[in-house]
Amino acid sequence: MTEIGTTTDATMIGLGPMGLALAELLLTAGKSLAIWNRTPSKAAALKKQGATWAETPADAIKASPVIFICVYDYAAADAILATQGVAEAVKGRLVINLGTGSPDDAKRIEAFVTRRGGSYLDAAIQAAPSQMGQEDTPILISGPKPAFAEAEPVLKILAGKLVYLGEDISAAASMDLSTLSYVYGAFAGFLHGARIAEASGVDVAAYGELVNTISPSFGAFFGHEGRVIASEDYRVTESPLRISVPAIRRILTTSQELGLNTEVPALMDGWLQKAREDGLEDQEVAALIKVLRRSTPEARKSA
Image (cartoon, rainbow, N blue to C red):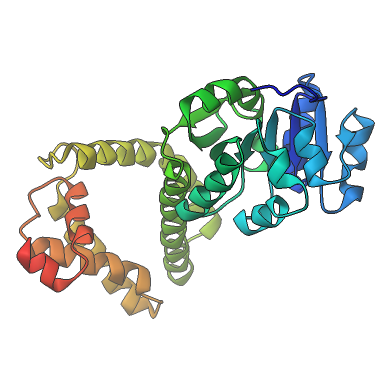
C-alpha cells in the first residue's frame, strides 16, 4: 500500500500519555515517524528524538503509509478526520484508530476511510501507557486481513499480544466493551468486599492483597466458563450453580445486617433466584447466562 511521496514509516496523530508512549516505542525501534497533535508543545521531546512534526493532520497522513490515530475517543478522531485536506490524504493509506468507542463508531470511521480509497483497522488497547511494548501487552484488532498483515510488524513494536478478531470492523470495539464490563463488574464486587471488610474490622489492605493472590486462579476459572458458554454444554464440570445460590444470599444477608449498600449482591441474588426458579441449579454456574438472555419476564416464560 506504500504511496510514492511518503517520507516516514508511520504517523502518530495524538500525543497524550498513550500516544507519547507509542511514538517513543516506534522511534526507539528505529522507525521514522511523523507526528501531529492539537497542542504542538507536547511534541518537543519527540522532535529531539528525530520525529518529524507535521503542521496539519493532512500533512501527517500524507507523510506515511501507516497512520495511527490515538486520541481520547471517536468524537476526537472524527474532528481530526473532518479537517481540511484529510479526506484526500487518506487515499492509499492504512489508518489504525486506537481510541475508545462503540461498534457503530468503528463502522462510521471505516466507512469514511474506505470511501476515500484508504484501508482501516479498528483497535483497542487494553493496557496503560507504561505497559506498552511488553510481550504480554494486548491490543484488540479488527478489520481486513490484508491490512492486518501489513500492519502486524509495526503493531508488534507497540504490543506483544496482538489479538486479531477478524474482518468485522466492529469486533474490537465489541470485545473491548465485553472485557471492560468484566473489569468494572469485578471492581464493583471488589468495592463491596472492601465495605464488608471495613464494617467487619478486617484489614482492607490485606483484603486487597488476597484478591491479588487469588485473581489468576479465578481468571482461569472464568476462561473455563467462557468455553462452557461457547459450547452450550452446561453439564457440571467445575462449579454447579446450586452452590452459588446460598453463597450470594449470605453476602446479601450479611451486608444488610452490617447496614451496607446492597445493590451489588442484590443484583446477583436476583439473577440466581431466577436461575433456581428455572431449574438451572444442577448445571454449571455459567448457565446463569440463560437468565441474562431472557431480558423480559415474557421472554423467560416463552423460552
